Amino acid sequence: MKKNQEKASLSIMKIICISIILILISGIGVLAVNQKLNSVKIVLRNGYEMTVLTAKTKVSEILAENNIVIEENEKVVPGTDEDVEDGQKIEIKDKSEREIQISKVSDETIETSLDDLLETYAPITEKIVVEQVAIPFETITKEATGTGDETRNRVIQNGKDGLKEITYKIKYQKEVEIERTVLSEVVVKEPVNKIVQVQKVTSRSATERTEDIPTAVSGTVADYQAYAKQRCYDYGWSDYDFNCLVKLWNRESGWRVNAYNRSSGAYGIPQALPGNKMASAGPEYQTNYMTQINWGLSYIKGRYGSPASAWNHSQSKGWY
Image (cartoon, rainbow, N blue to C red; front, side):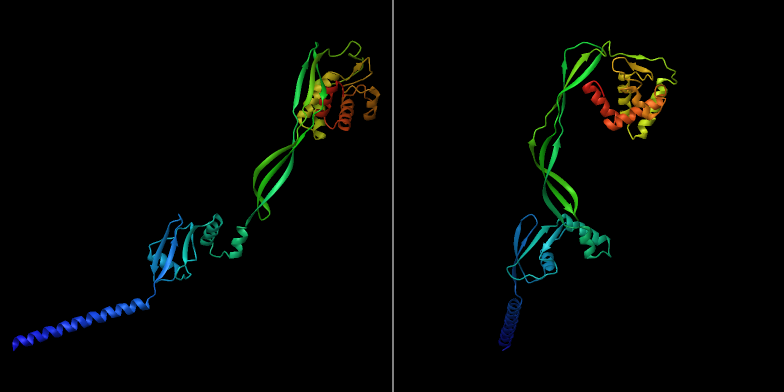
């Protein structure tokens, strides 16, 4: 009798355990049925793809569930606060330089508005621009046989600039050029070189030599040149122009106030031809170096623009 009771108790215990197990299994099944799993593809920045099953719908939760951390220079599409459905894709991409800069400004400047950010980091536009640019000609010097103590230059071919077209890609931000890249260069017209013949000649023939007319003059060559230098500055000319003037009047008169050319009648420091032209600058033109220099510089200004141009003409033609 006792054994029968024990057997009955064991049977009841077995029935109870089996019932509990069945209840648990059915509960799990109901939970699985009620909780839908979505298939979502995640594409990492390096191109690697992975498909995950998840009950989550929010992008940030799905990434966290799969231990994926978004770095500062990365962005997520769709955004981390958005929801995805079954079969959708989450992509992790590089941020553009502009997005990174805006993000930094947003972090540093709490009061910054979106309009301010867009104004600061305005979009960049590109344009293709074609420009025509001059190609400077070169000067070629050719020496000719000759003897003498002076060098004379003669232009036997005038130079002409060439022309080329340059195609640029130009980047603008807020209508201001920020970058220029050369795409191509095409020569439209080749330059023509200037050819100058250089020849040694005698400085002046016997009939062209200057002589001094006995007149009462004052001052020294240093005084004359100091005054001429100051007058050059008054005209707005440079030290280079003054140096050209020194060479020009060294050749013409040696900076002598009473220098006279017996052949042509040219007179004075600037070798005015005829000498009485200088009377327009003052009645004492024959003896006053200031009057002669004032007239000479006025003549150079009106005819050549500067002493440098006058010297170049003298080098080319032998006179000015």
